[in-house]
Image 1 (cartoon, rainbow, N blue to C red):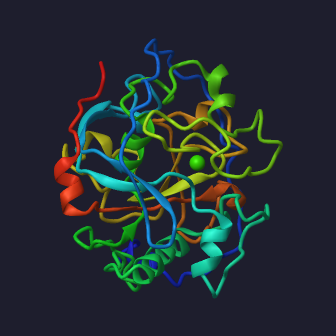
Image 2: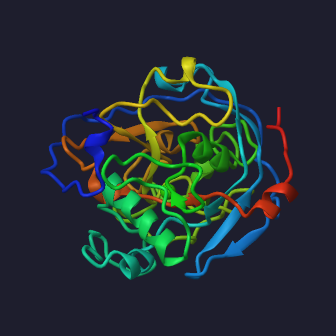
Length: 304
Ligand SMILES: [Ca+2]
């Protein structure tokens, strides 16, 4: 059995053991400003969630001169996809997850759900797919994602960073200056040691909220610190095997540096040996767009 298959969707929480004081370090200062807002098409799903049609395109993933797992910066192409405008809220989660409807520490229907394992997030994706008559992506025994299915899955790490950057090449989607982060996201300096209701800060240029901060977001990819030098240029989906999954965007308890577009974190799928606080981890979903919408989408290049 591979370690990947050990992440079956029925995995239970195990006791958290905080093993590391995650040290912050300075990030390189870049000079580019944020992109102006782009009004991308949105859809309302059957269940009432709003999703943004993210166009296919190329972008520079990672951060030249960044942390060892952020290099090399490399050009990646991703296909069009739909992404939730907000983190999954507790109200949305409870509607489908009848076995464990309210796992969150910081309660509130409009706050992001947290204390959700990777496996539970993937299970939510499957339940949401079934609820809307779509084909579930996850094999609930092996935890493998069928990307050909039209249902929901967690974003690939490349999809997440592409959507977060929204055309920018700077440290954040709004530019390079971390002093502006408080206008765009909830992090250690402004969150009040708790999550906050979603969509209360400014969205990025593509209309996505809380990509920086509030809760860190599970990605579909297994984490590998040395993945970038060997990742494919088109639709990278992470290594096949490994023990931890990618988390992106930082959270209410993160430094500004941890909330950067390129910053990579990771956690075991069921919080075994957890480093990241469980109540700082949530997710949002993506899925393939309807064929007609994909054909109509633009194909912008990353701004240089
Ligand atoms: Ca977030």
